[in-house]
Length: 436
Image (cartoon, rainbow, N blue to C red; front, top):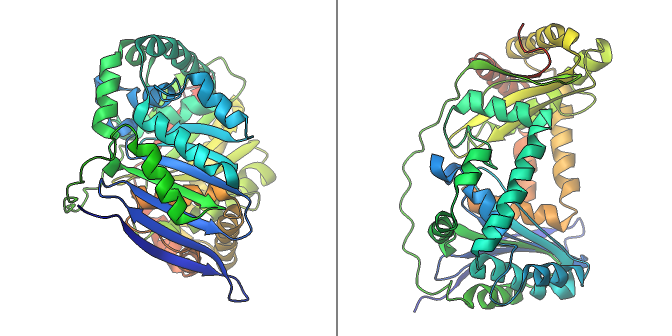
């Protein structure tokens, strides 16, 4: 019978040489992975169940199924009702939530150190033992339809959905995560149950935890909580050798939607980088310097110097085989043309000349500070572990990530900007004025 395999991934030390954190991974015979980081001095712990299934795993008839399933796993198991699940966390002052992304779904909790076994048990019960009752499907269907209507009322959500649709078309990456009114109305309980059985398998799940914990204890707790319904029975087949992933290119084009709003919401972007592209560190520096804060080029030029918009920022989305880079702006309709002209001019200038050395340093400092300061929180550390283990080829020590950020040069940024901003433009506009 195969035995669990445990490995210490890396150890962190303080300036005095004392151990401040240790990251370990245990892989169970079923293929489920447990990754933890012990944080010296912490009194709480965060845990997440990262499932390698999201909206891009859906066919057109299953559009919105992964998000629907996320809701349903809170509705009760053979051991706990929906109220029991809520009370279990509320009674200890804990937090329990979930979210669905395009490539994964995450169920997570944060509790005091002594309540971590309870959180593990609740999450394991939800993920492996939910009943998915017909009456719960119908009740939650109405909740999700309300959620879709709420997003339709948010112009920022609408414009980013339009941007993704313009980039990827009628493909899973181009569709909204929550589904549409029509797709949610058509989903059946049996379709959702089959999706759960097909995608919620041990070899597609990572349990990540960080904070005040002991790795061995967490492994024992996970084996009990996830094994009660026979979920961990059997041995995972060897993972197939992956061939080189074909990069998916975004389409260029323009799309618009009329809304009776006071502002126009705009997203202007281009095809980006995959999540494992070595140039992603240079893109992180470029993104920070271009539109990542109040000192960024876009904020200074669009808002401070010209007064064209209240909010302007840049972003980068990474997927296993695709990516997007863009700028998001909200402005008055009369300023739309000036805003687009200014943003395009800044992108062209960066593509031609790159960033100044001090801008590169500012971008590196913003990334470094955001990374290190964010990781003071067990929840951020848990997210880094879960996402790194599930979707990246490697889980790097924080010091190595910082080293790679600091190794980015102005030439790296200039070459990348010249490549990115020469690509076909994607434009999405939502507001009272959609024709220019």
